[in-house]
Length: 276
Image 1 (tube, rainbow, N blue to C red):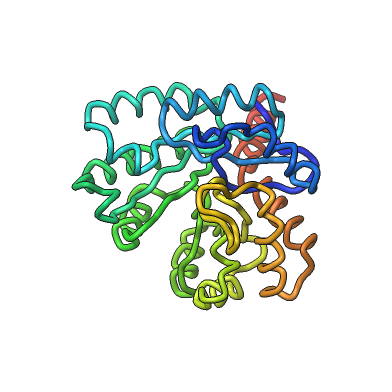
Image 2 (image 1 turned 90 degrees about the vertical axis):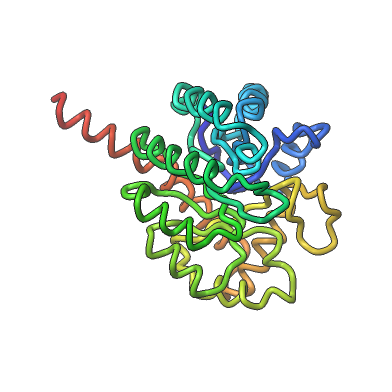
């Protein structure tokens, strides 16, 4: 399994997205700018296979497998159950479980609330048993997501990807021991509530992402966002935090490394203590 390489890291993106014609070119472009590791966001079984193929070609690809709320809403309960069984078998080959979560926007949800909740609960339990951090997609379902996390998320660590909420919302996730990952929207001058939230997020709980090819910063065409825009995200966060670009990117890398490998280190230590 690929690991973080020296250099900066994009904490969430979709290089296996079929809309991207040449992901290798985007990787090379990002590497030329110092970005060498790319934590993927899983969508469904087809996406997991594309991730595996991409990781074989590029050592900086960090696989993450999960059932995205989009995928869940487009599939039946039986199909979701079968995919959950497959996820349980394949999760050991990923660094994280996700994306998972809830998205109750009407055009996404399509009356799939109960199915999304059931899959979310199952994946949290799977992450706990497998000692994998989770990548959370939480949109217009904050109250229900908090309830599910409080019931099923004990001992589970992870990140809320594409965080665009307010300072009180940030505090609610921080209280649940989650990291917050911000991307292109932070560069928008009108998102002042997000800027205020970034101010209060501790640096050791903050991550930077692009969500490529989506969620571009201003000036980038929707659907054509690239990992290289991570530098624009870092510049804005650095401005808000009163730090340098390098300080922000270095800390994001450090945070993600701890999040991805803390459980592995703990398990390794435990095995050593029981096998002198």
